[in-house]
Image 1 (tube, rainbow, N blue to C red):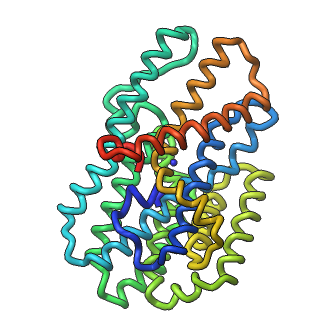
Image 2 (cartoon, helix red, strand yellow; image 1 turned 120 degrees about the vertical axis):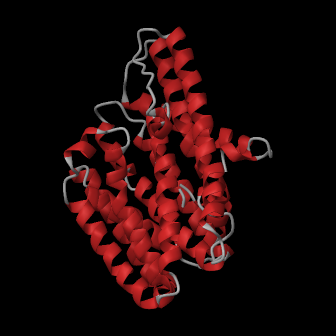
Length: 340
């Protein structure tokens, strides 16, 4: 739904705003967000279904991070052309999207044969932007967002006054988009347009954050006090979601706060050790529903009732299985493009 979906899907080189320690926090946060998406898509029991909402911050986190690092990369490579960038993004985002769409289509066909009475769907031409499984919408969305961000960056970077105005405009636009209801035609398209609308505030705030970064925000974000405030605010807003349910403004703000906290340059060794798995957050996101739906199909075949215990078991299997699958895919050159 890194990143950041995913920094791997957005930039090829390490950002100048982060040294190796800071990248450890970013990787750790990406991994945490990827598992939050696994959790978001897992609970079906009455006891845990309402708790799925605590994973809603992950897509805004990945969206804001993606925009942030596009501008950072453009500052490092100001001579890069839009054509060159478009070709690169198409290869790194849209081709894996098509490949995973084929994989999930094969899964649906197998499920149709094994469990003909279970719900299944086969979409039409819209699979080109929604994919064959509903979480794949994020890939075309992030492709459009990053290309748009790159184009905007080419127009305004190097003009300090314009950057400041755009920074303020994006912050304001993010609040507006998160506070108003979408138009009817957007609300009607629940497979792409509505999901994109819900994530747009984070894209605006991510752009505002990166445009404000050279103006002294780097020292503010590097402060441990700022990171502590950001992570405490993040935890408080996640608790708010758990207590009161979905809210676009809170979800997007929570994702942005996690990104700010992840920019802290100092990290303990255990963050570095765990964060190294963050390089496959892209693959975890793409593969996790394959594991979840396989577990659900097996449970249905065995006539296991839906329960909170089954939810926790499926989450554990999906988190571990998608991590293993993404790690295996990322180890070889031929399959690395599918996972990292």
